Image 1 (cartoon, rainbow, N blue to C red):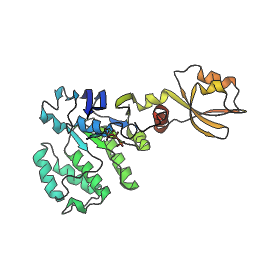
Image 2: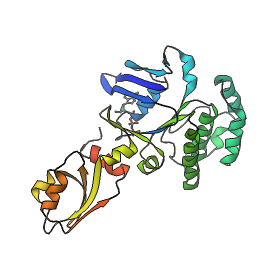
Image 3: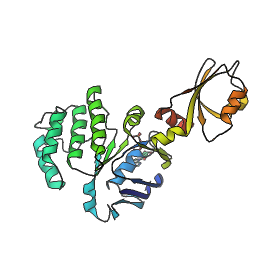
Image 4: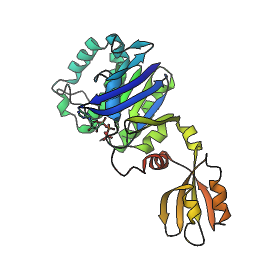
Length: 292
Ligand SMILES: Nc1ncnc2c1ncn2[C@@H]1O[C@H](COP(=O)(O)OP(=O)(O)OP(=O)(O)O)[C@@H](O)[C@H]1O
């Protein structure tokens, strides 16, 4: 188990991460979402020990990655634009990784290169942007690290490779030996593969739920009233969208009165719609006018 324990990160007197706490068990895909600049990348970089937290610790199987650096072998970070090692050839990088990561699996590496039809090259700079992203992913999984942290992993990948990658990520965690933590703005992709979502706000965790559970906490409905929306309804709902008299609303299920208040006005139309992660994101974070 990986434990992120009370991580706080202050940079130039500014608190970027504030008391972040959560556990990662093996066999899960966890999505980290939040507005631009909220601290997602800083969190991932701290979780692998690239950044030192101002306070708090990251534990893997009860050992701190900061106090026992060998534990860092268990966690790999794939940045959104990997710049390192670009002057090397594919095969040289394999040798460097073999020397660095004790569990690096050369056979698995070449198997994945073949699976994703990625050729070996004399210099990594010869790869296109998408090929570099794919290469970084393949390298990360070939280290056989238990915790793989991905920052915007599908950026720059074409739709065919993207689908293959999403499928691959799901397969990787299926055996229960690996967990993946993904920071992404692609909420549709996260929805497809994540079982847990961490939603960040102002450098803190606003909520951390299983995605399925989170969806049961809210209800999305489409409502049409005879005239405009009654004032007492407005107090109980979050308006996602309005097109003419058609409102798309989010109702917090803990507000027991909300549906009754709507029904009291005898709406012309009142029907439930499937709720998406994007709806939850807008509901929980849409009220912030600034990029945090
Ligand atoms: N080295 C640094 N020095 C000063 N401030 C930094 C540094 N790195 C990050 N920050 C600040 O920390 C905050 C969080 O940045 P971070 O890159 O973690 O956000 P993010 O959630 O990943 O954003 P995005 O969704 O845009 O990628 C931002 O306000 C950023 O300006």
